[in-house]
Image (cartoon, rainbow, N blue to C red; front, side, top):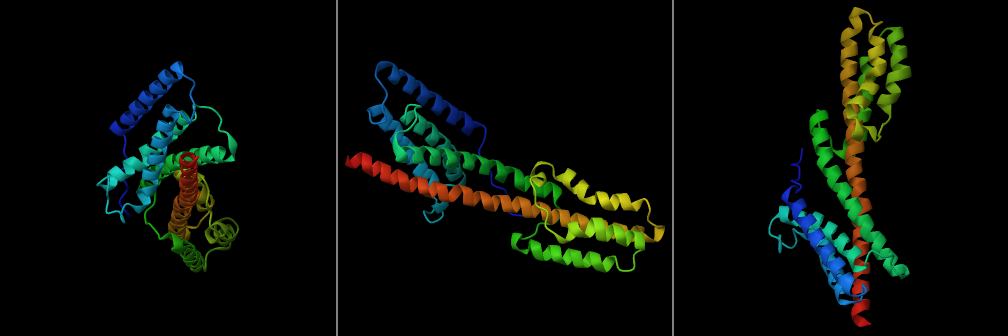
Length: 271
């Protein structure tokens, strides 16, 4: 399994909170003395800082091409990507003075900034939880693209194993066990309560054990191993699929945000 990323915590969270608090105090103090406007000096300062932080965050994907410059290490790049995005979102709200934006461009920028920040934080949670969950609960990691093929192989192995089984055991297998083996079974439960989902998948076999002849106990044990392998594949299909889906939900909106931000900055400078 690939090495898990070291996501920043502790001191970085405190530093980010302190910067946000100081910025909020500056906003409150400035607003006390004169009306706050995005186009005035205070609004322009926070808007510029937000734009720079979002650009630095989106450059995370190009850190290798940039040879780690200007932040040096991969961990620093990750810090800027995560905490810079959060501060950038806060600075956007300060830029507009916590008021609703005016015009289509303003709404697009605000909604995209909110979406990319929220989806980014969701991605941090997923990338911290999923590798730990897989390492703790799944015995063998599979390549995502090979999971359907491996599921077919398990079904064929189970069919061969059940050849010659008693009529009662065969009926239970065909009616209650094989359908789950032959079809992918993704679901949120693999993320929220993987052990309970595995127990549910094994329930039909557990119920059948009480009526099995002693000669079929070994066959049932082998079938249980196959079902467990299938639940591992279902879990990985869901969890790896979530990470892939998250990228689609996060990266394109972030790139659109940067494009619209460039247009917004150009319009402010030009006019």
